[in-house]
Image (cartoon, rainbow, N blue to C red; front, side):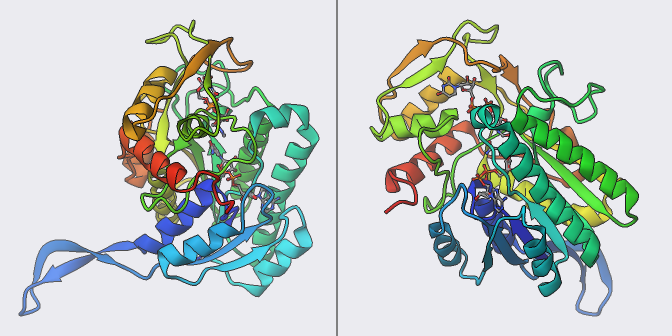
Length: 365
Ligand code: NAD
Ligand code: WQD
C-alpha cells in the first residue's frame, strides 16, 4: 500500500514507519502437493512492503531521524517538510502522490502546554486533521488510521477501559479534547462518505525504543512523562525523579498506568491498516494497551534493574489532573485486529536504556 504517514519523524510515527517497511504484509497462501492437489493448509508469506511518504514540520522532532530510518530499513522514504494546517500544501501533496491510506500521527501532545496554550492545541491538532480529511475527500482516499489516546475516557469511566463503556468521551485538558473532537469529526466523515474506513487507535502509555537503540523518544526540554524522565535520571542528565504522590488507592500508593512498548504499538498500526478493508463499521475505536497496570515505583525498580543505575527519587504532591489508575481492556484489538502487546516492562526498560545510554542527548549530536 502507498501510505502517507503524517508526523512520521516523531516518536511513535518513526517506529511505525520502520514496522511498515520491515514487515511488508503477511498473507496466507494455500499449500498444494506436487501434483497440484490442495493440502488444506496455508503458509504465511511476506508480501510487498508498504511504500511510505512522511510529512512532518519538525515542530517536535528532528530531521536526524530520517537518516536513521533510511539506514535501519535500507529503504528510500519520501519526505515533505510542511505544516499540515496549510490545507493548500496538503492538497497539492495528495494530488501529486496517489495514496491508498493515511496514518495521521501529526499533532501536539504536551498536556501541560495545552492548558497554557489551548488555542495553539485546538488550531494545530484540529486544523491539521481537517486538512488531511478534506484532501482525502478531494482525491478519493478513504482509509485512515488515527492516533487517539486513552485520555478520551476522562475521569469517570471505570477501569479497565472498554471502547464502548457507555460513558461519554471527555477529557480533562485541551490536548485530550482535541482527540475527542477529532474522533467525532472522523466518525461523522466516515458515516457520511460511503467506502470510508477509519481506525481510531486509543493508545495507553507508549514507552521503550527500537531494539537497535538508534531511534527512540527525544523530548524537547524537561520531560513531562515518567519513562523519559527516569531515563534521563539514569544517565545523570537529571538529578532525581519526583514521584507525583504516593497516597493513591493503588497497590503501593503511586499512580498505575498501562505501559506498552512502542514497537508493539507500531505493530498495532500495521495490523489496523491491514484490517481496514475488512472492518464492518465506517469508524471503529480500538484500545492499544497491555491490560496490565504498573505503578510508578514498580517502573522505577524495573528501570534500575535494566540499567544497573541508581534512580534517586523523592515523593512530591499529586500532579493536577492525574488519575490513580488507568489501563486497557485490549480484547477488541486482539479479536478483531489479531494484535496483542507482547513485550514486558523489563524489555521496555532495557530498550529505553539502550537508546538513552547510546544517545544521551537524543538526536542532538
Ligand atoms: P511526537 O511529538 O513525537 O510526534 C508528532 C509529530 O508530529 C512530530 O514529529 C511533530 O513535529 C509533528 N507535527 C505536529 N504538528 C504538526 C503539523 N501541524 N504539521 C506537520 N507535522 C506536525 O508525538 P508521538 O508521541 O509520536 O505521538 C504521535 C501521536 O500519538 C500524536 O497525535 C499524539 O497525540 C498521539 N498519542 C501519543 C501518546 C504518547 O504518550 N506519546 C499517547 C497517546 C496518543
Ligand atoms: C505516568 C505516571 C504520574 C512523571 C500522559 C498524558 C496522556 C498520554 C500519555 C497522550 C503518573 C507519574 C510522571 C514524573 C511521576 N499522552 N509521574 N513523576 O499522565 O498517564 O499520560 O502521557 O495522549 O494523555 O496525560 O503519563 O508518563 O506523565 O505519568 O511520578 O516526573 O507517572 O503521576 O502516575 P500519563 P505520565
